[in-house]
Image (cartoon, rainbow, N blue to C red; front, side):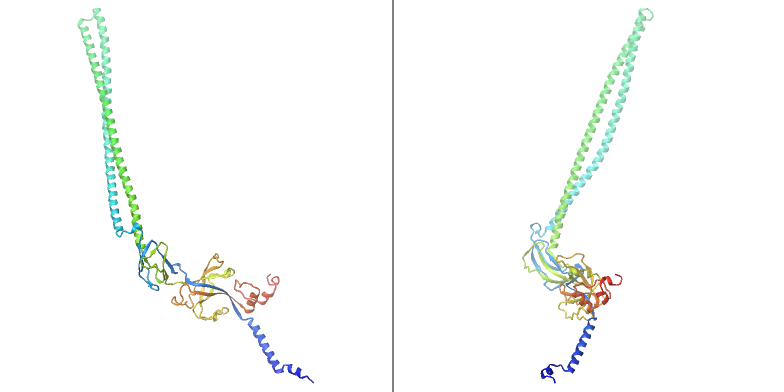
Length: 445
């Protein structure tokens, strides 16, 4: 006989069968779930940008000191490259004259004329130097010829003097002989008189030859002196001409320097005039204007406005922790979720995600940034659904992404996370034997 309390605590047989059936189903379901495929991923964050640097938002800054004169656009306006955005008034005292460029052009023209005149003087002096050089050579040759002729005449006169001296000495010898012979009565008195006459004649001839020699020597000295005077005069004229030529060339060089300085000033004035008008650097939309009123001053480097270019090559700048950096390689697929776009993220089964988009890693930085993370760029997958247009997701939109790695069983993923192991670097099939068998007992170990 059973007690009433024992009867009350006994589980009915039917309920026990249902409980056992439920437990069996749970065990079978759990065992089956362990072998469900699971996709390993690396969760990353970033923001939408542009892969090309010229298509990223650009800040335009002032280049000169000036005051704002006019805004030609408003925030949100679309502009084309070269459209005038605003105008500044230059406040530099050196460049404030309204007709500065005209005056600089006039000064440049005057300096050009001055330089041309100096060069023409130098050219004329070059010609004069050539002519004087030719004249000096001709005059020097003529003077040398005259001196040479005088030297020859002097030599001839010296020869005559020598001949006259010999003739006189011969006449004196003849006179002595004639005197001796006349005393001996061997010659007549007439012959003695002729001998005396011959001595007088040869003496007169010697004096004439000496006088002629002295005259020719004086003439030669005078010619040499005149030649030296001519040479000195021509050399002085050449030196004066060369000095004037050097002065003209130096003047032209100084004018050229003034022209270069003037050109620099004109170029600066032209550049400042161009810099006073700020144009749109690219096609795009003006997204932010600096709150500057008319007449307010700006300095070089002050931000004027920001323009968002028309993005034809969208890309996402993403960041990953250093532990995940070895898993980031160019070409790996990435599933992307744009902030503000409705989506159902299922990282373990990317093919079941809704509202996400496909991309691929293009490049990974080789060094970490200041915060210790690694930056990489993700571009759209060319053969998949296009990313939302720029009207819906603008540059700077926050993005969440999942870098797709390997497909593994769920039990392996649970075991990996329980042991704090990183995801697999290489794609391969995972087996229970490889996981639980000690490394020393594995095949090939």
